[in-house]
Length: 66
Image (cartoon, rainbow, N blue to C red; front, side):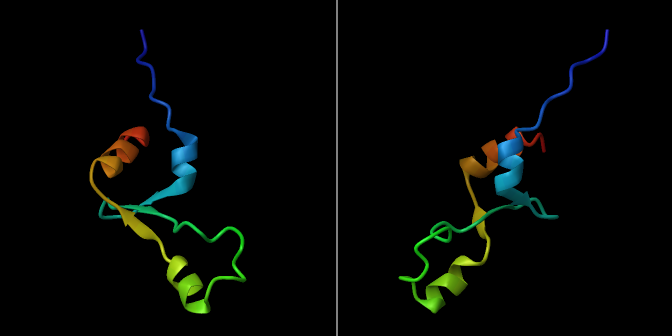
């Protein structure tokens, strides 16, 4: 009898990146709409990915089977 394969959570795969060293990265919030109100400095700051740490990062890795 063959062993069942674990399925990857596709929505987690789309929303998070795993770096080569194993860090979990996410996009910054507040970038979707209403950007005219925001300063250019703020928009530049939101462009970069942010690191996810702690138990949440562990849970995300588990969902991706890493």
